[in-house]
Image (cartoon, rainbow, N blue to C red):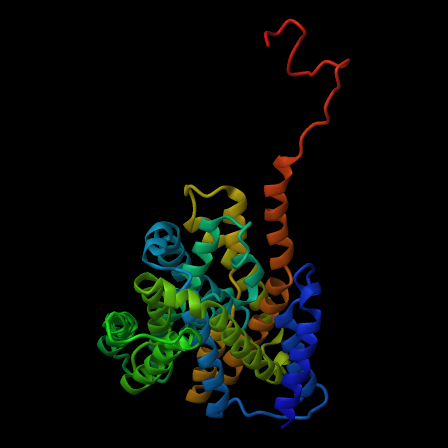
Length: 410
């Protein structure tokens, strides 16, 4: 009951401080992370969860699935078409470069062999908009920037998984089954599209109809079925979740709209629970395990490698420099990296504990840095919209305006 009590207490504190958090650098995500640290072995020692157990991985997996489904509903097919030129650059250029460049300090500074270093690069390559929610969800922020971050983070979780599995197989000295991995990708995409299509067609039958108060549960039912099907068929659940959300928003915009508020709250609860549990995994031993080289690797991955790769991928794009710089900075590491790190830890490969510790350090730093800077950056965009509305004071009848002279025609 201790985790449940802690979750309720931190949730209540977060709700009471949410108004302040929306205006300042105070982060709700950070509150849950700190709450987890406090009740974990690093502080009070009230609970000590085993990361080798399946419960933590399942919770992180469900949180990621729920968040991706909700994100997908903000990116229907027209939005994907409009935003794909920029998102495709970040995914096709920035993401592979991130994998390779993170592996360099992981090898030379953290002391990992090249295969394990590339595994770390794959684990830390996906991004998560959860820790930059004030930016992605604020209408004052340019739409193309929000779409870029949303689509990139929604797709790269599923695309990173094959590379994680390939490098993990190589680290275990096993053969990587490329055909099976591609089949899992294709299966996730197919299930994520076909299931909502079938449900949308069924809902159009004249003798069927959902009661208004129950309509938000329709997309939830689709999500539950989809998650179970992906688990049974080993299809890529992350691509499936984002594809399902996007398909629902395209074919059944009314259902997606009814689900939006409920889905946002559901994903928030799942996110907060996963953050609280993740916080308990942050121990002094785990923070010390990567050593100085590992910490430097984590810092470089966040403040140098991600910004550099995205700026390079967006070179000569139509985005203004300010938007490109914002997209480059907001590459937070989140639940996908947690899940992949747990997969590596549970695989038992040599160096698995070090890999997981390095992932924990990077994610913790990312949460602190990105979730505390999204509000100020979003407010800067808001102020930019307001600034042009200020007018010069009326010069009055006896004072000349600098823009006109007395001889100008009326």
